[in-house]
Image (cartoon, rainbow, N blue to C red; front, side):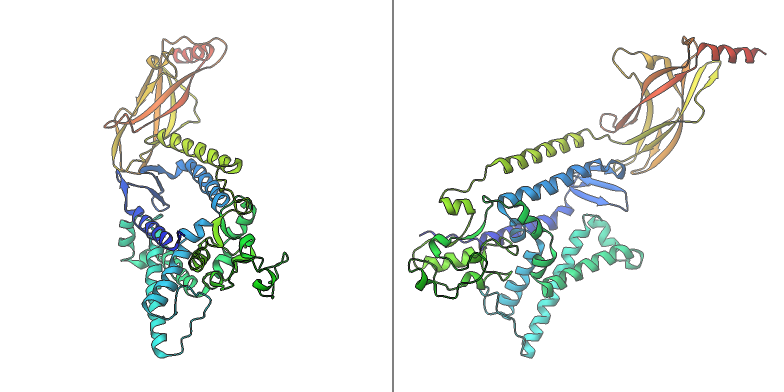
Length: 468
């Protein structure tokens, strides 16, 4: 009988997850981070692309991916995140199973998590203190890694050298680190059971095809009644064909202190420790485990788990559509920010033509300095309005440092020989384009603007006043 154990696979996932989250903040693409939300610099980095805080229209896409992704994973595989990738679970394994059990020997064995740790000697208390000090250091490292998503690592290590000048950063770093250490050492799995909101969400998202640790009562026998009361009579007496030997190894190994034989429970985090424990026991009898990672439908019908079903397909379609939309928006990101507003004075009539003035805000969102210039383009292919317009001011390029903003008053003139309408003012749409002289192909922004040209009557009145 082939034995399947999940503990080693889970430990491998722990290592890979830790490496990923610890190294990701240090990876940059063209000087930009994979994910960084810097309130100090007003920047948002996503997949190596830099966005200004005014471009946070991407966050709704990310939030949709986050929540729909959680719904999808929970519907498919229950609280798999909790048991396989959650920092709470990973650090509890490090603290309880590695430090307290393997290294310092404060607990007898990993397989019994119900046994209380007794610190009845001075040596044990010293070992417990050392284990707690180590976990504090690890939690501070984890807290720093969390801060790296809001403060670049290069800045973080500089800031902590002058803690008095960066009180807010120090407060959040130390607070998260110390709370995490207290949580791991004292709150323990009570956080998963009573505090974490995810356990409340799972009961809504589960269905009979959701994968979870399940006790096969058809083979093992009924341990609990329908109202949740444990049957006191020995299983072999009430059901001689029952395969469960009532060793309760699945109960002893459970970190959240539940009996999986009772059925699906809110406290289960899908760590599959009970599956491993039962697999080891039943292997001695040359039988498959009574607790398996399966679905209620699969257990009852003895068929394969239905991964592809209407609910999971729907979630995958939403995730794919949102991800494609995110990539599309990201690929169409402008290389700078450009805001154009009209001034209070609509136009001025001059001998050379008619002037319109605009307040133009330019913001260099790139990671390096550029010289920016303005020009006029036609709003459509069949338009020749750009040939009639000319930018009077400014005439010279404007140099902006990385992240710098500048407000400019831009004057656009339409030539005097333009035919005016006898009925009223005429709107001529055109495009103002701002671009970096050294990289016009990627760093530019365009805005559609209206040029207001006065009516023939107003122009004639102005010329008459000028003659007088």
